[in-house]
Image 1 (cartoon, each protein chain N blue to C red):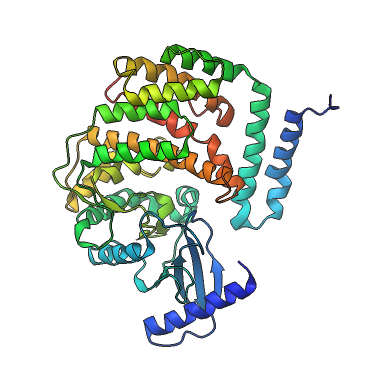
Image 2 (tube, chains in turn green, red):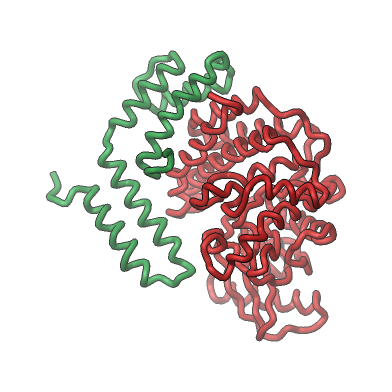
Length: 117
Length: 333
């Protein structure tokens, strides 16, 4: 066990530092890089706080959409992607698309909150 | 780039300028222009005279459209009345620029999209840009890509060719993206009718590849992804939400409406495509941007181009994925 702060709290602190002070030290034409790094810290902090729940929801969604059981979310994603490509799900494509909007919304909650609103 | 390498490049550029303009420009100050992800661009200055050099990174693998093609396309675009930085001289790999590259005139302005969308001094430019973008696209699309040596062409239906291209790109990356697959599958099953006429397609027409001055559009740059295809491809691409930088009420590059763009496009001689055709290509544009994000993150992971900025694009794939699955199924639910 590590002592406080938690990993997510440390990333919050890094993001805050990069956004405020560090950005000012960097020449104007290179500040974009600092913003990219600060934003990444904020994304990872949200990802750590969300834990395994989004992946568990995706696993359930992918296996339901493809009809093939799997215990690993990456394998389930690969199986579903291949089934879609082969045309196996063509008769259920609108439902598949509707289901995958939930998956994408879960990714956006972490990577870009507010984008899906 | 190391100092000796930069000095050697400066000497090569000086020589090339001397040959192209007929007189030695004198000692050059060379500075990299940040922004290009796959090509290097440098500003060359001698007093108040300025030029731009664009070249392949040294040792880089072959690109989609080699710089020799970009050089020829820029010439053809200029002849067709498209504002471009006038291309001055091409130098093959192993020549004075090291890798393949070309010299062009410098055009004043910015290609940083958020600046174009927010800066006070560009307010008047934003007012005229939608019509200028439409007119420029009509002139680009009037060019017969077949007469420019080396421009990628395909005998296939452009919509189906795009499906195959991005399916192959996904396979090459080897990471499953079910949301992209679902959108792409829908697009493959519902392609627009083959266009009546194909033309030169810029392939990456958005503010980041345009130079904007206070008077408006000053130049179209970065022809790396140009090819022969359906003109609606560029019209859909310029409408991607990712290129609006938050100005979602102005779908065309964050500056205007589709009607403004198409009115100007038609007035400049372009054939006005149906709304559905443009939407299809906008959706396909989101497939393309999602795959490019995945590929850039992959390039970082396999060590081709280690960069936190490229790596971070792996967490941006979901943005075009979301937009893609809002667009399809086209026509509802």
